[in-house]
Amino acid sequence: MVKARNILPVTGLVLSACATAAPERPNVIYVFPDQFRNSSLGFWNEGEYAAQVGWRGDPVLTPNLDRFASESVVLSDAVSNFPVSSPHRGMLLSGMWPEQNGVVLNCMSERPESSLREDAVCIGDVFSAAGYDCAYIGKLHVDFPTPNDPQRPGHYVNDAVPEWDAYTPPERRHGFNYWYSYGTYDVHKHPHYWDTAGNRHDVNEWSVQHEVSKAIDYIANRDGGRDPGKPFFLMLGMNPPHSPYASTDDCDLEGYELYKDKSLSELLVRPNADTTLAKAASARYYFANVSGIDREFGRLLRALDEAGLTRNTIVVFASDHGETMCSQGITDPKNSIWRESLNIPFIVRYPGRIEHRVDDLLLSTPDIMPTVLGLAGLGDRIPASVAGRDFSAVLTGEGEQPARPRAALYLRNLDGERDAEGLVRGYFPAARGVKTDRYTLELTIDRSGALQRVLLFDDAKDPYQQHNIDPAAEPELFAALCRELAVLLRESDDPWFRERTLAGIVPYDNL
Image (cartoon, rainbow, N blue to C red; front, side):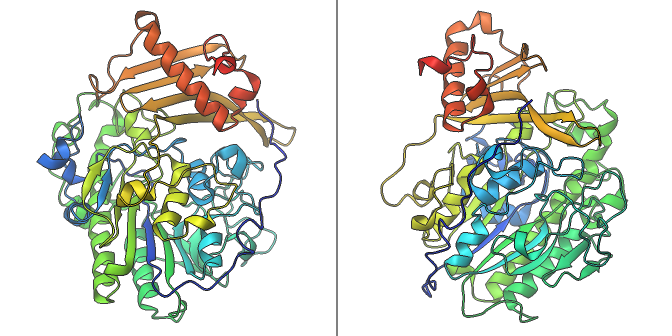
């Protein structure tokens, strides 16, 4: 078990260099629906894109995202290093690894030590300091829920035990001056939000549709909540297609019409998908939400066109992790190194600066913050605390090109021990792994620290990861990947590196 570390404060790294942004600064919109499979994009079955990957895309209709991709750089191999909502979001916002930013587990009231550090310099802090108007709309899920309900002081925002949802007070909003958000609440058609002033809004509308409407209002400045003299940075965190996805009560009805008459074998087309699982029927509702998100994303893009802002706005479409959707015979949609959990969409449009292409850059989650800042011309403001790298030059093809990563790190943490009050203390680093351009390796340990499982796949020959390679049959390959893992663990100051976990396999002392 790893105890929470006492890490030095990082505030003040960029905030002291506050200057008004130049008028030519681009606006930035970052859209990230939760649990959206990279394969759930219709264009992956088209010739240009299909030729770049060795797997089959889902049979989904996403015309707006397809058109957006044709105007963008599309990454085929972007990675969610810790494919769970809160840890991904902590890395996304801070550019730091989970142990450094504080979000080491999914945030909920029984895990008081997993919460985004208030003193972390996050992407909103940097944009705000650079003179941007900053807005956050939708799901946040990086705060440890506390009894701070603005409408019921001294109480959690709901009466559930344990509580997952959270209200984020102004001092924890990290530079976002426009706020319309919540922690996590999985009732897609009856969502709620807290606005900038802390007022709660309960809504009877599919959450994605409502959030896009709020984003359009913000862009058009219909309620005067945005400073029109500044460029803007908008993050839009949608909850669907995250579960629940068990009935029409959970999904976009217009999207459902596209899939309701399809058989499970028509929907779950991958050879590693088990259509006999009880979860298999959820594919109709999941894909319904995918197509609903596509429709609403198209509405957002049209609003940019109507406002005359398209050419000077960077738009990113991504996700926090994937969804296994009955692959590998498992029901857990995430928190695994399986490709469909680890791989996320990452599509970037920047008119006049980015030319359309598909790129296999192994972008990691901590790389997103510095890369987005670099695209906006704020590369010199990237905080020293950021562990990720700025790959904006790779996306634009301009300037000196950074070395591309050889591999990406994979993390899986579980709860640590519980105290007398039942609260989780510390965390257990159960698995670590590495993804290269061709191979996937995961090492899992038991609570005693002994090796429990090895997963090793040749993703080029075995794109659906159906054939686990015996390390004894490929000793040189296994040793090379363990060396790559050791390098990444050292660079991230991971507890496996500090404690020399599996030192007989992972060569920490011979790098």
